[in-house]
Structure formats: structure tokens, C-alpha cells
Length: 244
Image (cartoon, rainbow, N blue to C red; front, top):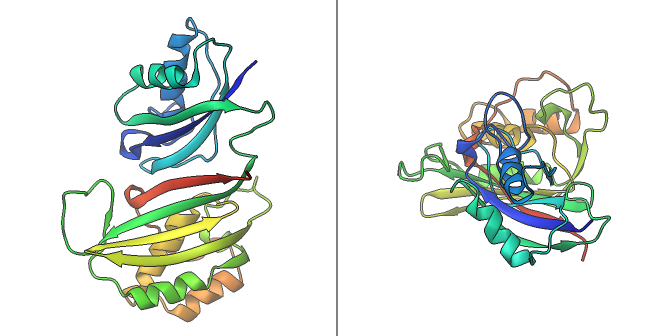
């Protein structure tokens, strides 16, 4: 059966996350519902590259599904979009190899977290209104996590997850006209990991936690430590990377 790879953008505030669940609408459910309308009511399973949390956005989420159809990819993309709400959109759709897997074939993922420092409220559902931040302090903290580390201190505890080591290849803050973006790229991310990192780094900038304490959390990982979690609306899954 033909396999398709799709790239998706969505506004996370409209959903209870990516993964299908009982307590609210999800992105996976929205796409599967649209596909079922194109498949005579029969469900088509959609597998995503990452399970974004409730309120988290995406501009480059990737997913795959199997569908026996004669429609060319461009027509299929338009047909799926035509059966979904405006808060989800398929950016691209193409044939994939039979062994392609949106999650397990990925080699890295890139997230961006956006903070608003100047009080502008027009993009309120896409940013965290933090007030002024110290970019030098933020980048000093961001540099501490580059490389391979155990991120137990910065993840939601889950006994089913035994390996909490991630390899971070990029971690940096950038400022432009009242917007401060944090960019982070790694081979994998743990549950809430980016939000815990951002929240804690912002509190270092505010003077509520020391750089030494942050480094201790990175170098000597521990469960149930005192850290800070940034709200979901500033976070966006920007890109999923695959080998050529």
C-alpha cells in the first residue's frame, strides 16, 4: 500500500496536543477524520514525528500514513485541507518509501520558543510575555546544555522512559524588536523538556536561580528537583530532520 509523508502546521491553542485522546480535540484526530472522509469512512492511522503537548504549535511537524488512492499528492493535500479546520494545514504531501517512519526515521528535531519582552499583546497566543530579559545570561545558560547530557532534571517523570540522554547540537537565544527566540536542536526530546529548560533559563535571567544551580541540574541529573516550566503557547516545533 502506498505510504505518504506530510508536513503540517497547526495552532496548538486549538487542540489538546498531537496525540489522539479522550479529553479534547487533537491534531492527529483532525487529520485522521479528514482522511476517513476520503476513504469511505474507514479510519486511516496517522503517525507523527513528535507528540506536541496541549497548546504547543508546529510549523514543520511531519507524519506518515498508508492510503490506497489514485489521487496525486498535490490533489490529496488539497483534499485533506478541504476537510479540516483552519487551525491545521498540510504544507506538503508526497510519496515515501515503504520503510519511512515519521518518528523513528528522524535524526533530529528543532524547536523554537518565543518570548515577548516589550508588552505588545497582539501575538499573545503565540508568545510568553516575560518582560525584559538578559540575553547574555540566557546564552550562557543555553551553552551549558550543548552536547550529550542526561536531562532527567528537565523532564516530566515517566517510569517507562529508561533512557533520558539527549544530544543537543544547537542551543541559543536571539533578540529582535521585542521578541526573544530560543532555538534548540537535538536528536530527541523528553516530555516537557524544552519548556522546563526555557522556564529555568528565564528565571536565571530574573535572578531567581543561579547559573551554578542550573549547571548542577545539568551535570548531576535528579528527579523531582525544583525547576520552572514555561507556558505552552510560546513553543513551536519548527522542523523535523531526516537523512537525505
